[in-house]
Amino acid sequence: MDKQKRKAIVAGNWKMNMTRPEAGELIKAIRPLVSAAECEVVVCVPFTDLDAAAKALKGSEIRLGAQNCHWEPSGAYTGEISVPMLRELGAEYVIVGHSERRQYFGETDQTANRRLRAALFGGLKAILCVGETLSQREANDTNDVIARQVTEGLREVPAGRLGDVVIAYEPVWAIGTGKTATAEEAGQACAFIRGLLAGICGDEETACGVTIQYGGSMNPKNAAQLLAQYDIDGGLIGGASLKAADFAAIVEAASK
Ligand code: 13P
Image (cartoon, rainbow, N blue to C red; front, side):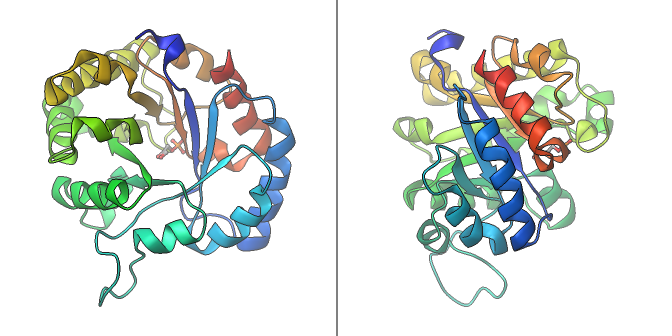
């Protein structure tokens, strides 16, 4: 399958930003700017914004996502949010294994995998985040780290379900730092991930169909170059997704 046939997805990861009124305002500003998008557009909002965001998105093509989920459907897990809860609020996507969750909240490949499987079997699409830290890159461990994160993250996921999985390659050193991987570095890592997917599912055609995003200081200036890479099919956008014009400019770059 060639790049043109794969689904490009630009997703905003709002992280811990935006109160409900602010979320409504931001979505109101984004909607008209991305109405002609030729890629899929997703906003992954804080749990507390999901309801307001779903209402603000009514009638638009923009999809709603969350930033985490628990693997059990319900139970004594204080502070956690389940997949059925997210679905009931209108979420279609959920991010799992983000590096900030790995760094600050004890997320491991195993817990990311449990969340991902719960999401898929509960009817959500999952964006699995992978990527190396600066010290791992400097030690030439990038491929080993990514291989482990992808393989463990997708453990026990049947190949037939990979259509509901998006992989986001987010080098940790490029997140929120203004440092972007060069287009070539990012493209190489994403190509490596596609090769891993082919090995995992034993089927090149399926691997070729999976959307792989780049994330890490993507902005209107660098988006086109990153998105032109053969194996980069969209972006997971942090800071720039909080500014309607910047987010829309990235969506436009992905629509070409
Ligand atoms: P920035 O775009 O702010 O670097 O964040 C990227 C990210 O972590 C998206 O999940």
